[in-house]
Length: 315
Length: 315
Image (cartoon, rainbow over all chains, first blue to last red; front, side):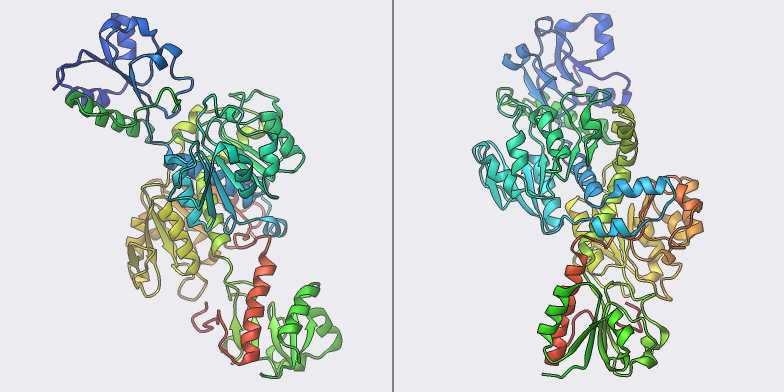
């Protein structure tokens, strides 16, 4: 069993602190604010919850467990090229998949319109009944078919949708009938009645979805994004909504973010926008802590960690 | 091949009329309004779309194909006890299941709140991120596990929910881990974090869900109904919402219906109400007509019809 110097955990969670101490009995455990007060940065070996300090101030740092999934914005360039191991929390599949399906169904079933009628206390059946739509029989395209996308694919299949996917390598995936690569992206968009984008943000994915991609989608197409806003050309998306080429957009992420007051995306036709919380859920910290504690036991035992990020690939 | 007298079809659909004539070449085909004008009621043998006349005026009537699924409100008492065959349209599984999941996800993911923020152009992440919930890991109870309920069960399972069901007979169902009967309904509600009610309205199901059933549901329970409003005690439901015992209700059907202006259900906490259109979809008439045409070919050939309603059971 390895001897640890100092583990840093988030403030205000005594139960977590006790669990961490139990998993690494001979380590010191501090919170972020205590480290700021005591100045023991040089001894920090493990951090749970992010890396707020310059790497040069933490010469003992070996491992950072992130709270989130995406590493863009969480890691400095020096961290990316260092030998420090970075792990992320992969607890987002269920909330993000449920969130995006909720948004898409809100559009197809016209629940946003029904909600406005409810707020006015009005029972208006005919128009909604004639214009609501079904996903059954249509094609779901999962853009970035990893663990989150695979969960979306399984829900889509249960809704009787056909499913296609796009990944960097395009290897066959059990949840998709057909796979595409960045080179065949236009065919992917042409096949997909509903696109769900869960791409990470990397140099390759920045601006991946532009005017040509959106224009390739079938009539009544819906574009949904819960990955990163900057993988999509916002101006092209607004144009596609305003012109009616797209039947709707369901966006949990935007570019810029937060979306400023008065931005045209707020009021684009059939755009639903939620403020980047698709991965959030009541038990989030509990689930993230469980990931960290499993990894900490491995770390202490000198075993491989789970959810190790490929810092070069960017996810 | 049997010789038919007169088939009545809905007004305004020439393509349907031509298809019906092709399926029954020697029959006369009229629309509802033409019958009213020409008075050939005595010759009517088959009706597609309901039964607006007294049975005594249609001595030749043999078969009525309904447009909808539920027969309450569609059939007179004399029709129920007559020898006239009644078939319904069973094209509601996908739209109703998608509709109810859309409503439930709107509540759990707090999309109704996010929509109000969007309407105000405000990006407010923290509270929504901390209070949104997931269905994964919770239990879906399908009240009335027929073909619509089975589709819900499959979607729930894909969302990593456990699934239980309740039917009159309680026989094992491949989509449910455990089945209940009316006698064990309290245990059914106790097991179900989310209840989806798709019961037909019969003497046995009227008022089936009352104060005791709702009180048995676990904390954060959600009650959804897309069957018939009168299977639920509305006053008990309003009480459960106002007191906070229920975390929410998703209602496509209500009692009374339409829900009158000023009714307390409109504004009950965490109640989402849509005006009885969960089964509606863009291709509804096309799909209902396809059911009728398949049945008409069987009828002409003297073969058994599909979707024959058990008029005594009421569904």
